[in-house]
Length: 220
Image (cartoon, rainbow, N blue to C red; front, side):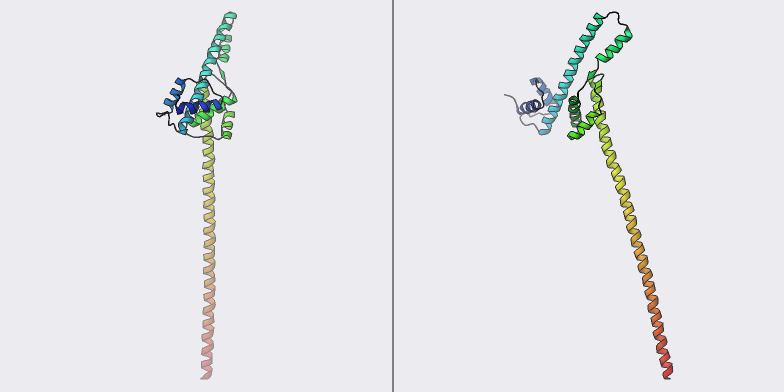
């Protein structure tokens, strides 16, 4: 009877069109994601195991393709013994390359981003995959290119956030400066108004005193 880990991983792979994995494949996946309790795997372990086996499946297909290409190259060499070395070198470079589909690129982008510790939306995955070439010298170069594309996308996202922080900080500084300037102007206006009012009051007092003294003098 299969364990819960194997059953769940197999079901998820089947839904995504992946089949033909052996018991050893599921065991190696469990070891890779550090799932010690096969009957109580976490959702994260199941997702990582699925990505692991998808990458492994793609890698195995690439190895098979390379073996077929090598066989074909040997046949070409036997049928055309007079081909010079320069032509043979060009032919070897072309045959020993791998070509990946859009689906391959999306799957590897998803798997690599998960391995790097974050999840991408479907639109982000498509955007990154579109910037990855279709032909590579080997599978290792393919993985390296995908990883570099993901890092470049993440850098662009952080650049946007940093730019937003800088812009908002500048806006805040200008806002605070404007409010401080308006407040200072109001304080200055208030001080000027108070001085004017005090001048009027003093003048009224002097006028009142003069009027009183004038009446007193007239009474004498």
